[in-house]
Length: 70
Image 1 (cartoon, rainbow, N blue to C red):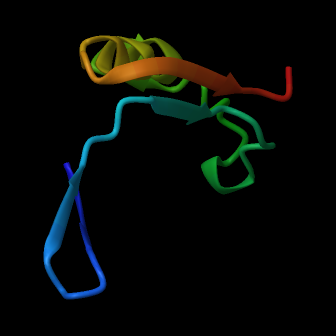
Image 2: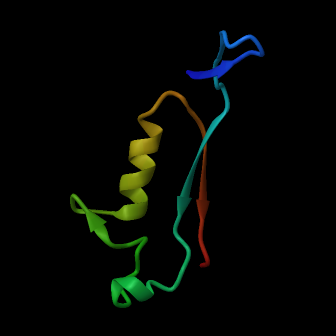
Image 3: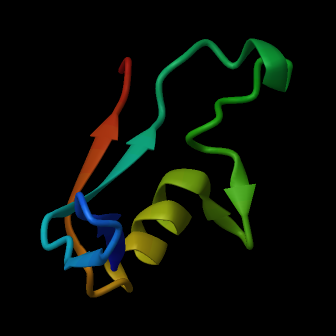
């Protein structure tokens, strides 16, 4: 829920219904000493799979976009 104020200072209520998750998997992994970020593991799963599962478990996420340079 996002709260906005009208001209007189009262709060307006607004609901967000189109929430998109963006997973950034592009880049050259320079800061990771050459380790492929997208395949690096979290809890014995590649980051991409772990991230997708987390976002898929959230009912409010309507769309997931994965950005990659592959």
